[in-house]
Length: 43
Image (cartoon, rainbow, N blue to C red; front, top):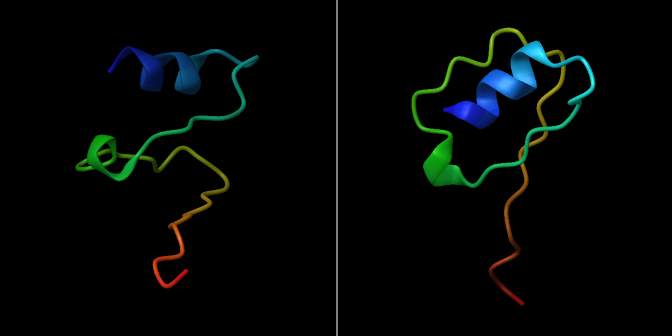
């Protein structure tokens, strides 16, 4: 995945946004913070 390589190796790229389908099987062991966000379904 090109976006993941840019995020990993480009020091100017500080945020990676993706939906749940893109996250399956990714190794994010190099990141320092992860924010998981889900929509509110009961509203």
